Image 1 (cartoon, rainbow, N blue to C red):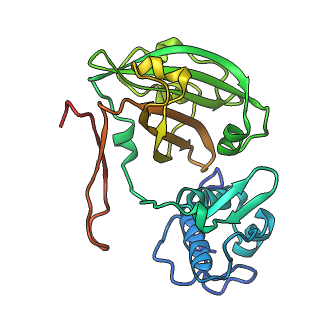
Image 2 (image 1 turned 180 degrees about the vertical axis):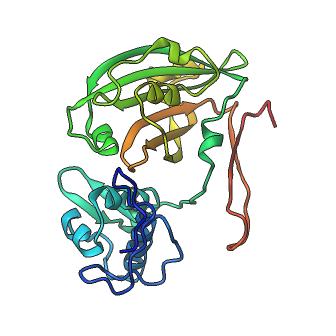
Length: 283
């Protein structure tokens, strides 16, 4: 393995040697530099070729780490990408399975710049509704890779745009990283998530975001001045540190009349598509 690893053991700048003993050769990967993306691409290829069939249980983390010669952190990041792209589904306490046809919803993978997602926005203001340390649910534990019931620092937030309700949601941070939420983190136009983690000495290095249509739950509807079960745009965002470990899980609901998502569409080999989130009064 040809690596340029840092002091923290990060493997992001590694490349598998074609004939490394004890390491699977990844055929035809167009991705260099990010090792977890190389592993993800190779597993996608093996699933698409039928080597792993729909509904089949994938080998264990230990087996795949040994097969690819990578760390668990690298493999889990590859799995996160496979889940996001709907190639596999995780079943708590059982394992990871190749997605069946019923699981393979239409999906488009887009890419946005982290700096744009975290950028200051003078049109937005943030209001902390409540905060507490709570036990992690099964879903939160899976996203943050912590045991079910482990402590997480939780907050509910409403985001206002020009003093109108724009988004409402919640954030979960491992209590081992963030011991408490400070209301001052919500006092500027800067993204509170970045401020909370910076105060804890954690730098956001990357993130993943899923956007779906959903019915807004009753406990959030009133904050957006909507009736319960109104169709809205729902988002889940997972942030990672320099080592690829998840450090924050954010979920929320956008007001359907105040948010839209625009993406550039280009041919393969052209400039990568970019996500451009716009509110409807800022087009």
